[in-house]
Image 1 (cartoon, rainbow, N blue to C red):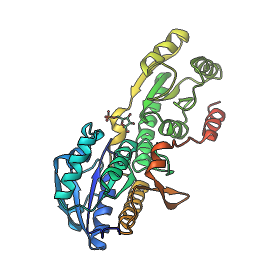
Image 2: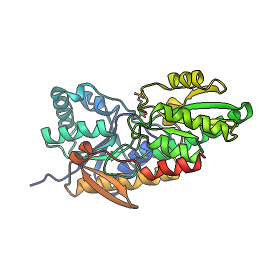
Image 3: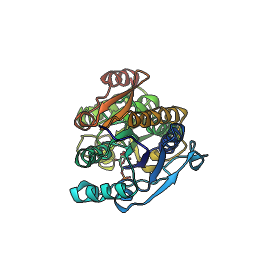
Image 4: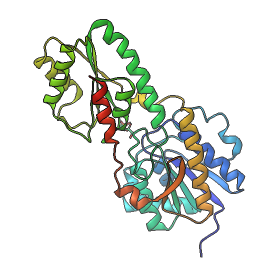
Length: 328
Ligand code: F6P
């Protein structure tokens, strides 16, 4: 027989993402609505291991829906990757009388959560929160839409100066091993070339394309480079290589970096965070475990954590074709 869930813990782990606060708020308020207690653990799995938590009620999460980052803070815990670390966390949860956990984070968070649930029989539900959008089982992760818009606004600004000085800009964006941010912002910002990890078209193709651009009358160009791209060169080496081979280009490099993780979440991310997190609480109250909530075709769906961890989300190859057509 499953245990009645009376007290739920929530935490954020891995790289922070805009909308995590909206997700915590929705977990806390759904708990209040269904009259179960809610506890927030600080700094992801580290806070669980150290027993750092706070009781949360509906009023504890006022005025945070619009805030970037995560007020519970986030971390990547090496200790939780060990069996001993997970056992310490389980002992702390028992001490704090926690019946189940909502884990907000990315694939590393879910890998740990799945092991934890299996080893200690503590129900967990994952809520996908990462700017990378690299999670199997959902079309969108919390924070991705905000990051896209942050990148877009930065690239638009760079375009102003690029065109004023007839320059070629290499702009590196985040995404770890996935090219979702690069591909979508590349199209949205009208980039001449987009380099993503999923599609290695070779460095010579980049030279040919830039040469063609110059011949066709373009005076400035933008190349979006995903941090995980497979050219074998980092963005600075790439710019040097192009400078050497196409000396008429005045090339510059901008690494957007962590600016992409900050800022007030977009409406899309706030609504997504709210829907996914309410569902996470409802699933736990319905005695479900070891699942991640996601969104597909506008519907909230669930996927076993095991599949989430093993799966790899694929990019839409048609976007590559669109980008090629439009960068003529
Ligand atoms: O997973 C989110 C992310 O921002 C990735 O895009 C990036 O590769 C990584 O985290 C950076 O991590 P850190 O903040 O630890 O440098």
